[in-house]
Each structure stands twice: as C-alpha cells, then as structure tokens.
Length: 549
Picture 1 (cartoon, one colour):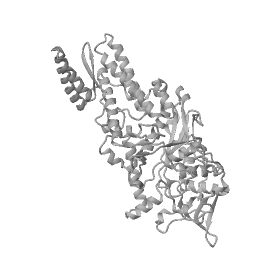
Picture 2: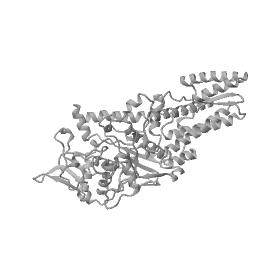
Picture 3: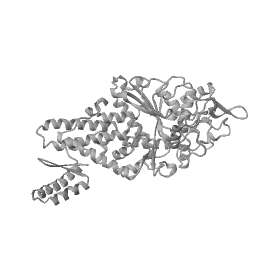
Picture 4: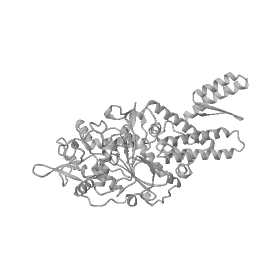
C-alpha cells in the first residue's frame, strides 16, 4: 500500500533549468526576511548554496477564487521573483487541495461529482493566476495524487509513537487516526505558544492578527473539522491525520489503508507533498496568515514527528480587509476575481494586491483601485514617451537580464528589507520622475545624445524594477491582454495617448498664444486647469512639454 521510494531531486531529474549555471548577485548578501516562528527579521541564508526551495499552500478548490485568495498568490509571486532576480535557482511548489469536506458537501448539494467540481474551480484559480501574472509553480501537486505518500507519513508518525489509531469494539481500525499532541513537546512553537510558556508580547501581537493555538471557542476563519470534534480523541488538542468517511461520502472519495478506509485529514497532505518535492528540509513555507493555526502548527508538528525537518523559515501573508474585517466568503464580503476584473484591468488589480508588504493588512476599496489606475497611467506614460523619444524599447531579454546588482540601490534596499514593496514602488516612481525630467530636457540640451543615453538607462531600470514585481507593461500577460490599453513599444502611439496628446497640444498652443499676447491670466488659467487634470507643464527654450503627475 505504501510508497517507500524516497523523494527525488526534482531540479536535477526533470527541470531543464537544472543545467543553467547559478550566479547569485552580491545583493543577496543583504536579504533579510521575517520568520513567523521566531517573530524576528533575520538574514536569509539558503540551505543549499544558490538554491531556494519554497512551498506555498494553494487553493482548496471548492468554489470561485476571491481577492483574498489571490492576494496570497501575488504576495509570494513577488517573493519568488525577487529570489529569481537575485540569481537563485528556485523550486516553487504550490499544492491543490482537491479532496475536502467543503468540496464533498458543496458538490452533493449541487448534484455534482466531487472531482468534477474540484477540477472546474481549479481551472478558475489557474485562470486567475495567469490573468494576474502569477508565475506557474515548478510543480503543482494534488492531494488526490499523493495518497500513498500521506499513508507512508502517517505510518511513520505511528511508528514513532506520536499518533494513535481509533478501533471499534472488536478492535478493528475505524479509519480515524489522530496525532498525539501530548507526545510532542514542541507543539506550539510556530505560533509561539509552547505548552509550558506564557504568552509573550510578540506572540500576542501575532494572535491579534490571526488565529493561534491558545484561541478557544469558535473560529470563524477555520471552522472545526467534524473529525477533530470526535469524542474518540485522547486530548482535545489532538487532530486528525486520517478520518473515516461520512455516510454521505461517495465511494470514490474513500481510500483503503492499514488503519481503515477513509480519507486524509486537512494537514497531512502538505507535509507529504512538501517532503516529496523538496526533500528533507527546505527554505521557506508560505501561506496566508489564517493558516498559521491550526494548519501550519499541525503541519510542522506532524512533519517533525515523522522524523523529517520542517521548513527553515515560515512566512505568512496578511489578509485583505474590507472596513477592517477579513475578506472571506464566510463573512459575506468576498469579492470574486472575475467580478473585480470585469471593472478593472488585470494590471491594476495586481498592482493593488501587491501594493503593500506581504505582512501588512491590505484594505480593499475603490480608492485602492483608483490609486492603482493612477500608477498605471504614470508608468505607461513614461514608458511610452521614453520609447518614442528613443525610437524603440529595450528588448525583454535586456530587461530580464538586468541583475539585482544593477538595479537602483533604493529599490534593492527595500526588497531586501523583508520584501518591502511600498519602498520598492517609491523607488520606481523616483526613477520615473527623474526620467520625465530628462525627457523634458531633450529639446533644450545640445548634448541630446548624452541625454538620450540617460533616458535609456532610466527606462531600462524602471522596466527591470517593474518586472521584478511582475508589472512590466511590455511583458506577458499584459501585452496580450492589453493591460488597460497597454503601454506601446515606443514605435507607435496608442489611440488613447494620441488623443490625449492632441488635446493637450491644443491647450499648450492656446497657452503659448496667450503668453505671446501677454495675457498671463489666461495662460495661468490653462496651466492650472491642466494641473487639476493631473498634467504637469514644463517650459523650456524650445517650447512647453507635458507629463502626467
């Protein structure tokens, strides 16, 4: 029944990129990341030089993705992209939970086959990831494809004395298997709640942000699994490793094991799949903050109790909130990704989701989307104007080939500071302001070739920084999708920009005539009207130029 084969080295066995030389940037020496278990930001050192292994909990594919789900995906996509920009070879594993109580119950209520429902919504998640520019994982394992791995892991836990099988009156296994929390003295270390320790200040702060082992009563974010409420448990803290089927469970949602027929508990799949694809210990385990307890606490305990090292570092993305409350379907505040994308471009939605550091709560509002749209306008305006001035854009290969060591220092410092996206974005707009100033000088400077070289250098840096955040408008998926009109490649102007250029040029000509007639009141009125519309006017010897603020 079991699968005794040890996990293979996924990189060297099946990844074409395994043959690519690794050149880690010097900037990697300054990378510092937060660890949930220690409540500290510390220097990052990979377990294997030049390589980073990351496991991120993916979706339970019960229904359509909402903004809260995708925020976590975008957050860890940015983390992954920064590792890639630093020159690391990254193995990124993101699982799919395709067997679960919610999937079974909702499928039954809708008259569907459970596996058909899971596949349908998995495709919706994949479409959302692709539309929002989230890189596909190195591998995307499914729970239903790793039953033998889970069974083997449970058996190791039992053999090590950290679990127990519930039997019936005749001594036969019922299919219910529980982790014996009392046998594992390290339980609670992830959430900083060792059984014998008092709550410290750092843990209390984290507990206010998300569920923890010391929480009692109903948890509106993580409802109690019926199996975990069983009177057969030895201790109230024990949790299901494997569970007997409900009477309503279909026959094809049951698997035979040495400890009875049933299906996996919630937590065991991630321990099995992370070990299968990342081996004995890996660098980072990520997920949403609401998974910190009980999911990740239980996962850490059972992995180590099976005799395997757990992740070296745990990272959790904070929630998307609406009026201060966690956005979730259970609270009736979920916003489906398709509905948000129906009213906003994908670039704008991604920018809004990734606009703050992954550990910061993200307040979702119309204003956040308005600000994201304004950011797009500023970015695309500069990229387009610079491309027109230069007669073309740097190639994608040139953009992606920029090493972290060649990026602006303030951008690198922000990203190395626990992936501080807000600081990184500020660095991008600082460079754009500098680029706009250079563009306004092109007609006024005799050494226009030198200025053009500076414009190109700035343009390349801006696009490389944006690309690190997954936001270069001239990259996929934005080029194919149009990305709110899309920045042009510099050889042609978009219809939107051409229309804007014509309207503003007309106003600038009227202002020039007013100034020539010494009607400065009218000239100032035109300037002020354009300023209120977000247009900055700069006067030079060769005339006036404009840019978006």
